[in-house]
Length: 170
Image (cartoon, rainbow, N blue to C red; front, top):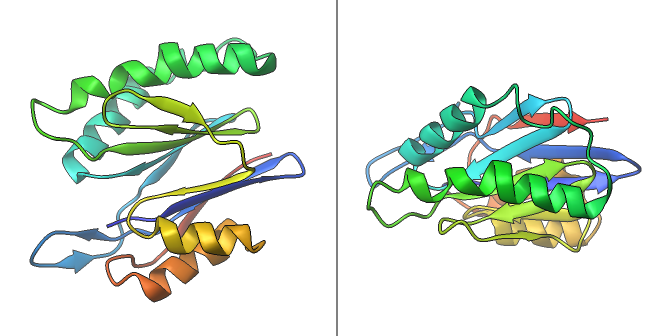
């Protein structure tokens, strides 16, 4: 289970995640769920661990091309999400039902990408995904930092565990 929380505040974007990996038999910490792919792009993942690993590999293999040109305005950010991020999602399912979800932080905006390739920009300056997201959303809405929001989710969601990891875009 997972919690990934993010906030954009005064030009700084912070993305924080727990590190639990679990199935019906165990819960284990220490698994990385957020990656800073370049100085302007952080991706957080929730869902099936195998699909997370394939998504990360797909993104890292295209890392050099991601944001090689500067983004200007929401139109170009939307185009970047549509052309660079969305295409990797449907290819990861291997015919299985997918619960993969990505939280993407780019150019001061936060985006959600779902298992069918659907995507949307959050209209808030904060967001959360994963099974611990309801706790994190509540904490973020009350003004908590993403780190505090993830700690709240860990406290109340038994499948979310530390240690927590953080990535920042200045």
